[in-house]
Length: 148
Image 1 (cartoon, rainbow, N blue to C red):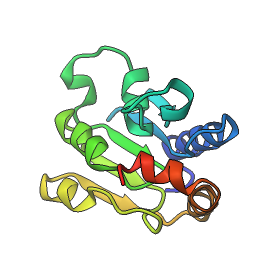
Image 2: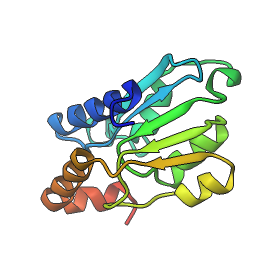
Image 3: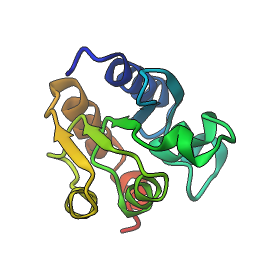
């Protein structure tokens, strides 16, 4: 699963976020037919946004679509989704969420599962290292991102 195009795109987005001085969390939304609907990365720092997390960025970049376009899709994300991003996945009837890692942060995985969404956690080493390094280097920014 680490070689799925959606996961590869999410990791590329996380790397880009880090290169821009932002929070290294990337996401990619893939339709049930395998089409990339949207991809993005956390842009809170870059855009001065309160809500532009990686998953929200991927949804934003997918553009305005009918609800049926999202139904059955898979959200790939490099980090366990927070409550806001979890809610967005539920709202848009996303079928599966593939998480790069949850060692550095565990978000709403249980809630997703309770709502019938399949959750797969990869514990991908690159995702773990990206977040560990970021949290170590910028703990205040990390705490701001997760509302601590």
